[in-house]
Image (tube, rainbow, N blue to C red; front, side):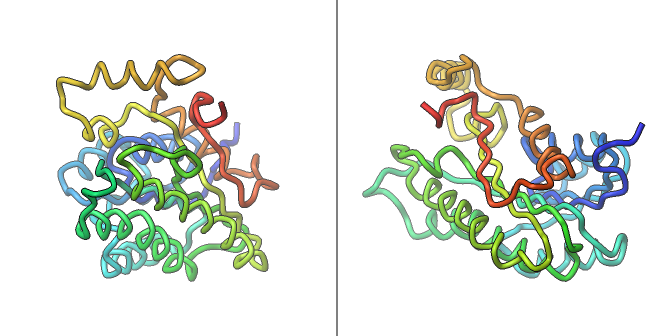
Length: 249
């Protein structure tokens, strides 16, 4: 039986943990060969071992253009093309208005906006016509979030990238969509809070979600497979929420 991504070449930035790792595992299970990136070699090596086959790990920080050049040089040498690009690397920190620092702003915008922009732009020579580009957004793109305004603003920017790039790339039939998770049980989410508050934090998030629980990274990965595959061949420029309904109420 054929798989939905048979023979596809995929790139997943921020693929060493959390949503990126879960998505890379799903892509491989559906027949793709995947390149994953991460900033920390040990985590990257562990992710490659966990995925097990049909994967190459490339140490890269998406905010550093020379790292992206190295990533795509590796992809070009090994596979020569990209069918699916998941620009997933990102992060943020809590800071209320009045306590936002220039360093914090530059770091968050550097990864979440600059990094996403150049991840996609530098991939263009390798992207095949009809490729699928997926950008990781967030429910914060459409909701106000106390002490998280800088991160939220970056995700609003990512949302508009998809609208605009769907037009820029229309002649190549490249689809660009945003996958926006709600609260997902990932290291990236939990690391925003003290370790002894993790359980209480997850319970607090769950209380505000219509489905009554936080999400699992694999649940986001399954939606990424949909956006990567021909099953979503007429889906373009959208923001698809995987949030248990929290941004919809």
